Image (tube, rainbow, N blue to C red; front, side):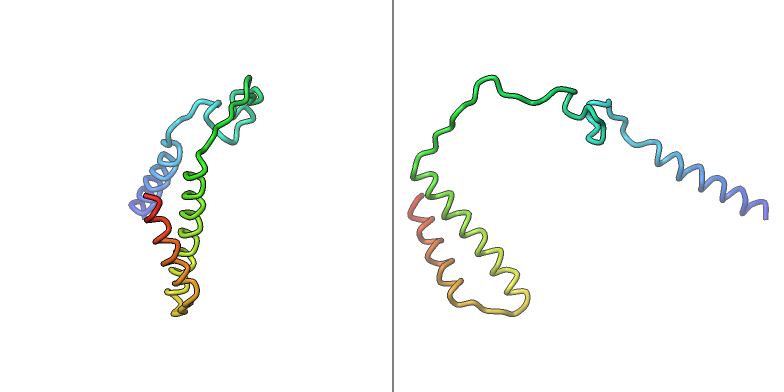
Length: 101
């Protein structure tokens, strides 16, 4: 009986010690802290404009559409569904993306 009690106390102390042994963060790095962003509002003194070439923008749109179609196709393949129209659009977008490079 004494061995069981000692083992329980050791196990309990190990569990409590493991919970307290986590990495300690300063208050400004904790996201649940009211000062998570350093205590002041984030502002930009001078707004900046980023100009993207039209060709790069078009390529990014094609790439994003292709990624979405591939993700949907992957989920449908897992369910055993075949969508011929989607597969044709994937081939068309992939060839269009290849022509950009």
